[in-house]
Amino acid sequence: MSTGPAKGMNALKRMLWDENPVIGQILGICSALAVTNLVKNTLVMCLGLIFTLMMSCLTVSLLRNVIPRRVRMIVQVLVIAAYVIFIKIVLDAYLPEISNELGPYVGLIITNCIVMGRTEGYAMGNKPVDAVLDGIGAGIGYSLVLLPIAMIREPLGLGTFFGIQVLPSDWTRWNMMVIAPSGFFALATFIWVVRAFKTSGAKR
Image (cartoon, rainbow, N blue to C red):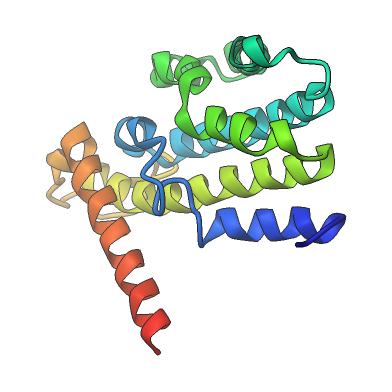
């Protein structure tokens, strides 16, 4: 069994690929469907989730030996909520337009299965450094799925990338690409392709 920094790095790598929370465990897909119609919104959501995962895992790991087992889930939710509120305050102050566009989805990070799963399943039983690396890996793994989807949906649906016009003005916009159902099909296709690639690689 890995110990020390190697254990944390193994956890980070595992969450990026082998146990990617979206591809491998199909977690956190609500935001994948809702925010991936714009790249900038997706990027902000990804950074917010990475920050929440990192800080929540760190805090829960530091407190793991003093949190009563019977109330551990309540404590974890309170910890996560504190960091999500901080993110919401920062967005309202510095990026109000994006904050309005994201709407309730920032707040829903509190109940995101990825965050709850990593704090309960890993941070509660591991040292702070390992827990932080595991959280970062889960957050980046989530981002590696959402960002490519957004990079496809926004240009096809709006002809823009990061709000900048990249396709000709006479481009026929695929309006369906900016609504939630298209996010579902894009995510399903992405997961199918990645899993097929992993299966092919395993056979080789």
